[in-house]
Structures are given as C-alpha cells and as structure tokens.
Image (cartoon, rainbow, N blue to C red; front, top):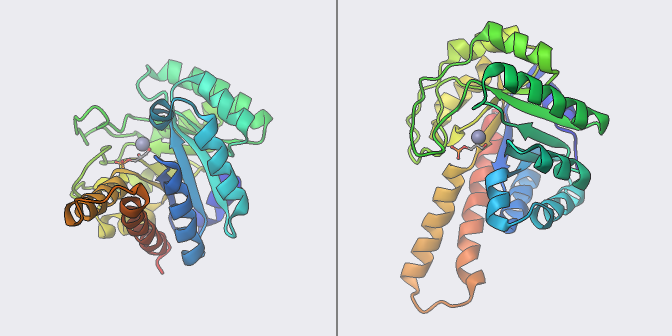
Length: 277
Ligand code: G3H
Ligand code: ZN
C-alpha cells in the first residue's frame, strides 16, 4: 500500500537498516522497483524528481501512475517528490497525494533555507505529509564532483529544530551522478550527525558508494539511501547491448525489457543488502 515516509523510516532507523529510495525516471521504472521490493519483502521509496518532472513536462501523469503502483503493492511504498526547489511543485505533489516531499533549499543562504523549509513543513504537515530537507549541499548535478562539502552536526540539530523537518539530507562525502563507485563517506561524521538529530538521515548521490561503504554508512546511522545514476547506467548498458546484438529491432518493448529486468534485479539486491539480508 501507499505508505507514509516517517512511519516507514522510524523502525528502520531504530534497527540501523537502510531504506532504498529509487528515482522513477520513466513510468516503467516504478513497476520494476515495486516488483523488486515485493520479491525482497521490503518497503521502498519511489521518488519523482523536479528534473524528471521537467523531462515529462508535468508531474500529474507520472505522479498519478506512481501513486497507483504504490496503492496496488503488497509492501509499503512511499511516493516522494525529490529535489524540489519550487514550492508550487510541492503544493501540486501534496494535492496529488504524495506521502513525502523533499524541499531542496541547499543552494540558498542558510537563513533562507530555514525559512522556506519551515513554510513547506507547515504546508505538508497540514496534510500529514513528511518533509525531507537538505543542509550542506551534495553537489555533482552540474557535472562537478566536489565531495568535500560537509554538514556540521551542531548546525544539523539546530536546522531540524528550527524547521521541524522529518528527514535530513546531509553532505558526508557523496556527490550526485557518479558513474563509478569510489566515493569515500565520512562514517564518523554520519555517526555524529545521527547522534545529534532525532530524525532519519538521507544519503544523496548513493550511486558513487560501494556496497561495503554503504553497509558502513547504514551501521553509522544513515537511513534513506537515494540511488539513481547507478540504475540508469545498468539500464542503458542493457539497452545498448540489446540494440547492438539485434540492430533490426524496432519494437521498443523488446529492448526496454532487458533494461527493466536488470534494474529490478539490482534493486532487489540493494534492498536486501541495505537490510543486511
Ligand atoms: O536524489 C537522488 C539521488 O541523490 C540520486 O543520486 O544519481 O548519484 O545516485 P545518484
Ligand atoms: Zn539527490
């Protein structure tokens, strides 16, 4: 069923296990991720980013379909708006029935990030919807990988208290859109932030982190694990291979399927890994 992010994340945080959050870039990805979560018997977050909304031209078609997938699932599925810096888009997600939103004010001066995040929290909490916010910018989306940005534990505690956010995305050594898995996370810092705040922590740019690095991060207190590029890379690799093997293919279902099967298998593996299974 469609589930609330705070409710799903709380016991996982307490048990020091990870919650996989995967970006629904194309509608079919949502079905592949739900099938994976059902096989693993784990909750999952399906997230639609503001960038994906730009690609699709609107939130409603992909958002409504993702909500339908969640409602039909046998495991808990959170439908989350990822990296929104547009409050109008947040409102639209709330109207559609998303159970979680990320307001990303990480590029704003801190005071402004606090003020706008607090306003989004007020809007979302009126509807019983969870809010994730980011403090300390996890870069990489502009192609520049600078994993040196760090979230200060004391500032994190202050930010959570000031804004009332339900989850906090932190900068601890990852960088968005890495196509290799060599990012080194600061697990000591993760443990310090986890001890300083009483909300689940979110890791962005998780594609750049190795399996072992992720296990250490989860044990240190990281809960929501956002993965996108890693799955895009697998999907596109399978599609490329299918088309190269069979240059006469014209039916898009024939080359889409191997891509979907591969990301579904990988999401199942990741969900089990995050849960130490
Ligand atoms: O919000 C989405 C994630 O942070 C995904 O980052 O594409 O580097 O895995 P990634
Ligand atoms: Zn992100």
